[in-house]
Length: 300
Image 1 (tube, rainbow, N blue to C red):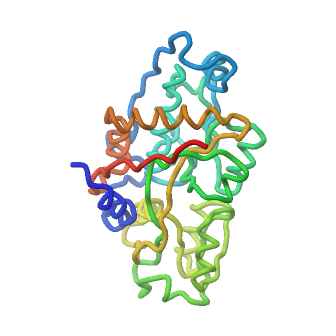
Image 2 (cartoon, rainbow, N blue to C red; image 1 turned 120 degrees about the vertical axis):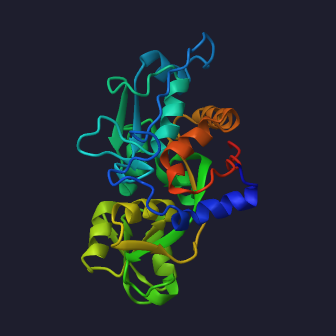
């Protein structure tokens, strides 16, 4: 069942409360391997304007996509996995398929591990063509790279030990709370009176919570829920969301034409049900209802 826009936002912000350990420890969710088979589209002549970046990618038959490798349910790649899995990855596959490229073919699609601190450099340096890595849309980031969407709404919460008495960020004044270096979460932690500590990866931050080095971890509730699922009985998600995170797609400012293309593909995915299917196979097994797709930003 779809939700109205207000309930959709609340579903996104409150996702961590209802994602109660439906994600497998390996980070997959939904069907057997937590992914969908997405076939490439047939690219008809003239579909993409001559000289556009989309035409170049479609003609070349290869693309580099920046995704997370350490976020269960969103972007996760285990040691034995050929491809990363998660909601971000499924949205990336929809975009890749529209270019006529097989998103399951590792010879055509290079899913590059992209941590929070190198998302902008990877785009500006041309190492990746797109970033779908729990990438919150912000005005500061849009000064450096292109961002459009959002294709998902969530909110910042806290991950704490199972036996912790912490109920909100207010309980952590002056205490160390970790997140990943380069994320907006660190700034918000500091703004609300705790001491933000940055690490290179989410998994490292989780380990610091487990061993008691820091009091809590904070980032998008959807990310935290996946780690709570991996560490059932040891970690829990607490507190009301204290931000709204609008997760979008990153692209290079050198190719502004990509914005309209991305939005068009996302709008089609909203309308034809493939966005909902991507959500259901990755985040849906947690028990949360599939939300209404968010409204897309206009391209400038």
